[in-house]
Length: 475
Ligand code: HEM
Image 1: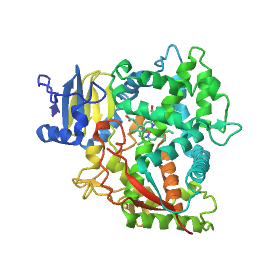
Image 2: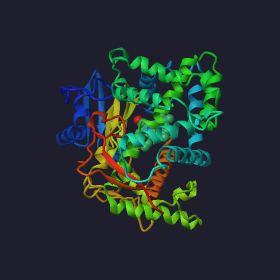
Image 3: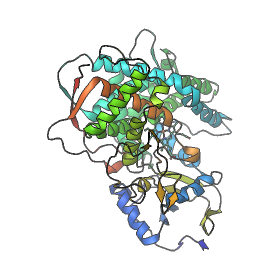
Image 4: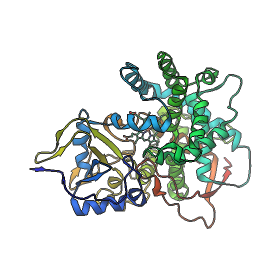
């Protein structure tokens, strides 16, 4: 049977959804909205808005069929349209810049496989540097804001790891100013990717220009200890004479955003859930200590910790706790654009007519919070993804084993190339935190809530920061 799009039906939403318009209704309570549509129309429904059809596919057992149609359902068509206007670079044209897109894509390999080892080692050193200088010199309880803490540590350590530092210094001057501008830009990010013109967003254009300026070629050329990943991208850009310096700076700035925009809130939630579940924190801390002592290292707060990549791989409970935080906080919308008219086959008996230019959207949050897949889906269970000391990968719906049950990093062609680095750096951050500090929420601190206004963008930040206390552990 062919279930055709309902051509003449009126729009199903009064507002707009991200990526196609002004993004209001969906952002208020995306889950409620989509589940209501699903109740009315079933697992697949088409919403006509802004002159385009957006077909939502709600059933995760159907995701493989969409991902399989990579040739006809393209991610880059969509991101190529949105990213240049957001980050301020010229769109890449295959005629003007032959091979550039492919080389950029090839550079992603430098975030993965064997290349992940030097990157992870460098991140370890930089995290340790920031912890040692900013947080390890005090005894007694100190209090802080958790999101701000995660942001400042991860921002500086990531910046140093990817982009390097001036030859004569271990840290960079002006990092706080750069971070403040980054936050200002990031606050406007949801508007920019929904194509709200930048001139409507107050001083955002000036802030973006300042951010781009940090990464102009003459400033980048003075940096040492840069990652191979960014070095290769610099070389690639230099081979294109018609790329302006400002475009090169904007590409680097876009990469800084990709590396931090989701990682910071993801780090926050992993820390928040562990600190607010002391029994889980205890198990995870024990696991980290065991992995260290297996390699003959007895932890002491006076010495610097080094966790190698193979050691990080053994931290199964910590990994499960991070995945569980990602499950709860991730709200990215994965959009594909149809490059041609075709019939989207969904298994043996169903297909769906798709027209060139239509958008297909998967919203994994509905999967992540589906009570038929995850028991008590709104609860944090740190060990949900571990079974008998190994990674747990069998999750079911309607007795069918699911391939896609946890999708914070997207899927198929557009899957995040930084995902392994991201998990490793969050592991490293949490390992240092748990080894060096006793941690508590401050008295009277209420439960953290998600800020729904970034639904569709990525990891949701908290609606307000959370106060916590930390003290050097006596070991
Ligand atoms: C917890 C942290 C992270 C999350 C949740 C995350 C999530 C995502 C998602 C969902 C996408 C795909 C968008 C889509 O399919 O529509 C993506 C793309 C991307 N991510 Fe990440 N990401 C994270 C960390 C990182 C890091 C650390 C880096 C780099 C160091 C990175 C680099 C990228 C890049 C370059 C792309 C675009 C890929 C392309 O154009 O094909 N991400 N990320």
